[in-house]
Image 1 (tube, rainbow, N blue to C red):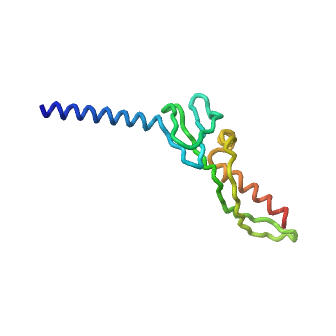
Image 2: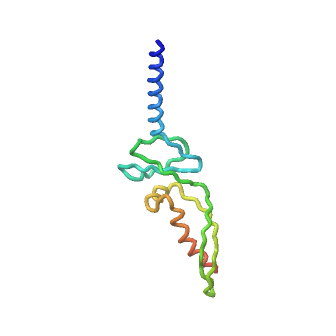
Length: 131
């Protein structure tokens, strides 16, 4: 009698573990202040931006790429020239925030590290106006 009860508990535990694994692969969370872009292995980057919360996806076919859409600060060191042709070392603090509706385009054309690829070239041109 005890063996049958133990066997049914083991079967129930195994079914519960399999169901938990399936639910873990089907659901994903997007934190507050973040947005996600869905990359589909068959169609590429979808033009849908997903907001915060828990969402469904097709396991092994879709992958969420999460972006931080809050205001961020980055210090960029810049070496620029002054009017009298002297080199000036400046560290510029930059506040930036990606436009949430443009995240699929940002991901497809620039990538996840858009801030490291876009901000330094912009900051090298900005101080030349004022010096």
